[in-house]
Structure formats: structure tokens, C-alpha cells
Image 1 (cartoon, rainbow, N blue to C red):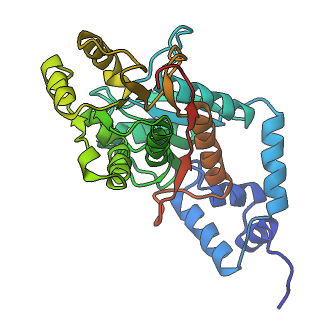
Image 2 (image 1 turned 180 degrees about the horizontal axis):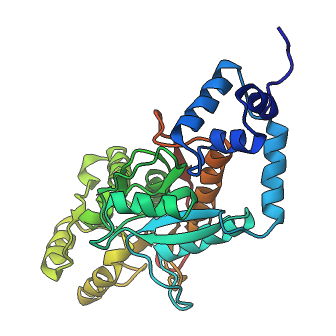
Length: 341
């Protein structure tokens, strides 16, 4: 048996096709009939065809050295995308900006497709993506914590950012919420805080897949039960419930989610509390404009960039559709020292 590597040229000669058609078929090009794709892939599998890693590296290099072409499009599926505003750098906007930048560096352009309009059904969106010759899809973080977008992904490599898109079950890139919570608790304990409380919106808990709360409860399990404080978890930020919770449990440190931080800090002031003198305060996410606060920098720039890298890897490896074993890529956050803890 010959040990020579089976090439696309060999496959083309065997099947009576040209090499470009074989290459497109192996990539699952939407420009080819399904029968042609299946025929080429079957012959490649039977002959033991394997991509040439050196050639793949060369293609990737050439892609980064040339401006993006019309067909080199990656889709950003989003339910809350806003036009770029220089004064607004929210969590989703920073992820999108870093994803777009990395896509451009790798030879692609990132195009937004909205998923939250009534006329955009999954079936219509799938047709739109095929018509625009999208090479890969990134499912952006969505506003709903249990979003289902049953798109036909057979012809598309795809990854998701965060935990909010439950369907399809694909590779995803997410912040390591669990580890970040443990880091916050550890930093507060280093400052001598013994009674740590957590204020967490229910929706944010679901958006993190319950990982923030789970890590907090794990940390509490390591201290005497007398110092355990129940999580203040609600979608509401009413002052009476906070006052009752604080008066009963008397935390000397409070971990807050950004969404409720403004209201909770005002309620602390109303109780005559100052931070960090009376109570340490740490935020689970620190966007632009919160430089004075102690807490976690979720490194959204790295999160967005790695989402593109993970997607391009799937494109280069011809990994399309919903994987049998989805992979989770975790991005670590950084503790950022402020003046509130």
C-alpha cells in the first residue's frame, strides 16, 4: 500500500471533478449540490484523506495578509445589538467590538444579523445566512437566559458566546463565572471580612448558568455556619427588602452584580453606611466608567477575540453543524483593585 498522502488533486482525478470543486465540497460549500458534497466526502473518507496541516497554515497566513473579500463573512447573531456609540462601552458592545477587530485581523468581516424581530424566523434566518454566503456563525449573548434558535447548521461552523443560547448545543466561549466568584470571596477574606453577602438578580444568575451563586455557596460551606448569609436574590431592588436583609444578617462585605449596584449603593447610603469603612463592596463585572470600584474585570476583549479564533478554527478544520460533544472554552477574569473593598 502506498504511503503517499492522498491529495485533493487525487480525489478530483478519481471523481472526474476539478480540484476547486473538491475543495469546496470538503468545506461544505453552499454553491454545490448536496449530492456532490456527499460523494466527495465519501471518497475522501474511503481513501483516508487528511488535510495537509502545512497547507492549512499557509491558507490561514494568506488570509490574514489580504483584505477581507466579499465572501469572507462571519455572522454575529444578536438580539440586543446597538450601533457603535463612542461614549457607551457596555458588556455586549465590548464583546462585539473585540470580535469584529479580531475577525478583521484574521481576514474576515463580521456582520450583524438581528434575531429579535418578529419577521425573522429561524427558517428565514437560515436562508439569509446561506444567501449571504456566511462562512461561520457566532451566537452573541442574548437578553433571554434560555434562548433557543433552532437554525439549520449543517453547512455552518458555529460557536456561542456565554451561556444564554441553549439551543443549538454548540461549542461556546464564556467567562469563568465560578472562578471569578471564588476570587472575589478570597480577596474580601484577605481584607479580614468574615460575613460576606451576595446580592444577585435572578435573571443574572440564570444568565451565568447559576455558576456565580454556586461558587458563592461553595465558599460559604467552608466557613462556620454561624457566618452563612442567604443570597439576596430578586429581580426587584426595593429598599425594604434590602434593609430587612442587611439588618438581620449584618454583612461586612457585599458582592453585587452591576445591574443592581446603583440601587443597592443608594440603599446603603440611606442606612448610613459607607464603603469600604463600614462595608466592603465588590462588583462581579467592571465596565468602563467603574474604575473606582473593586471587583472583576471579565476581560471582554479577550472573550470576543477568542470566540472568533475558536470559530475560525472550526472553519479551517471543516467542522460544521452541531457537534456530538460540544466544547466549553473558559476565559479567566482578573481582580481589579479599586477603593471600595
